[in-house]
Length: 291
Image 1 (cartoon, rainbow, N blue to C red):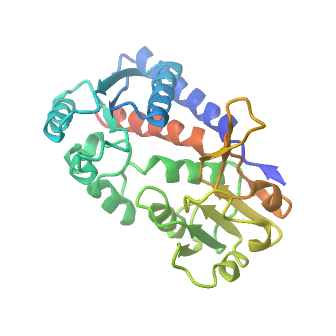
Image 2: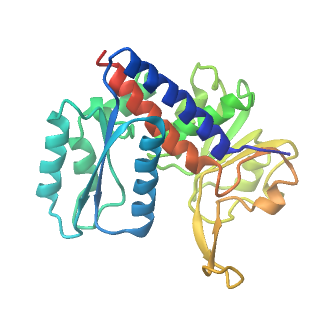
């Protein structure tokens, strides 16, 4: 069993990006600038945005954090987005999800300029992805593809099961892995909570991407020997033995599944760090388009 070390791989990618930024500086070209909008004080979101700001500093990007109060109106948020859309110095920006319930997330994501949508969520970029046109790929699926490629995990002709059908992970993963690309050409089954005979389906998979949002859902009796497993989930579970009172769990029951796996991602330290690294890669791409 080989652990897919997202933390180390993401650091390798950041080092590559830092070298590219240093070269841009030497050549007198623009330094990439990433902005983030966060609304309210959701703890997980604040931690995640803080990690993005630190990552920008690590690779030499300029960064801007726009921190708005919980009672920010939808119209006020749209005004902030309009300002970032017009700001020529901002190469890419993200609106951190989830947003407060009184704000329509779809309306907000549609307002982002597709050319600055480094999260890869805008329908224009999703459509380009589906048609295999150059675009910003959603950061988490992009990170998973990068992990598979860098660990030389063969996908061509393989039977892949994606657990979960979200627009952020599940659906784009199923599309990317089936495409004619270096890390693709797989036969993909997109399974979800309504799928019947799920154990029968997962037991035939060469590769499983678990993004169903249920902690420790995938267990050892659901997989075959030699499977490669990508665990996208992360949930806080109560644990009295821990000083902070909880432990982090993925969508995979790690202890039972690892015994059968050829490759598996840990939680934490697997997919999470890759998401931030690929957000930076998209921002560098956005900046490079202006050269």
